[in-house]
Length: 456
Image (cartoon, one colour):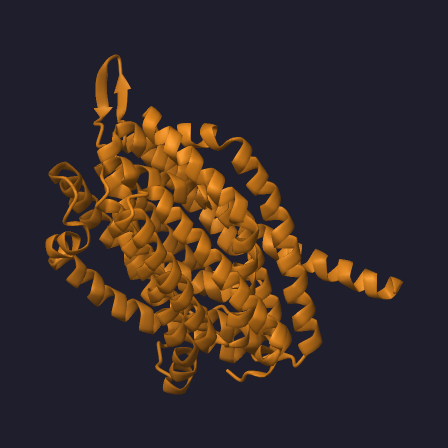
């Protein structure tokens, strides 16, 4: 019994050591995201509404390629577990080639068709919000190819067990983003004169784009000049390996479909909220942004589970993979429950960070409390999803995402929020129902155990 307990403590320590850099990374992203949103919120309610809408659209575009990053992460973790470092490096190269080529084309099309794209999704917003949204959208598009580079290389590094390097890069990028935001959004004055003009929403867009470009180049530098297990040689010719591409695609396409379903659901919710008025849009944006407090540890433990489970399955250590999964889930639930209590108690103070509008603060405070209650479910569903991704059980994740997001979140949110007139409260009931459904479905699949024997 003592040996078993020591083994569990050893596993828990390994999970925490792998998770904490990812948690720190998410804390940095969350902190800068919150500060950036607060900055934009000080510009005005129209500004925070415009930025929130476009960010949901950008996340949808990124979702297409997040699947390839998942494919790369899973394959790299398996190959590292098999002690095949050359194959792992090849997987990274093929993922980058596919993602960058496709995304440059889509970014170009996105810029050309910017106006009809925003009108299609957010045509019901006011003219002022639309103008701000269009300006923000056109600027941030240019940073997206570099976001994909960051996602692909960062995912590969995590799959290989290196969560610290992505954390350091994220720290650098977010400090740059924060400095640029504070400078460009409000401007810099000296003796009553502007040395740097106040750019408002445009300044926020420029800050995000510049920092994302820097992040992409930093990841490339690490990949080619670092000393990691998956490093590429700058002198090596870029080569296509269609067998490896197909292996990544077999995992990546279902994972992309999952992300498209997920982000598509989020986007539709944003569209529904956009028809409820500027206050509702602002409340929704604040609620989602504040929820990132819980997302940061959840992401860290999900990444740890994906990497450790993937490598264990690659080495045929099936029982160890299950132990990693269970302990990752349990630690995540405990940590996020504590954060949920904090969010519930200080919900009004959190909401007041983003705006001075008393109506928005009141409603957003209620929304944050609702989120706080269901946070443990969010931990379960995300860690279990990470485990199933590591196993290559992506089709089930796609099915679960569709049922949770579209049959419950979107449908119930629309009926309660729009048809029955409950507004954003109805939207959040739909969101919470989705959390319940997906956490139950993932837990059932995990308990069945078939995921341990899937070949990728």
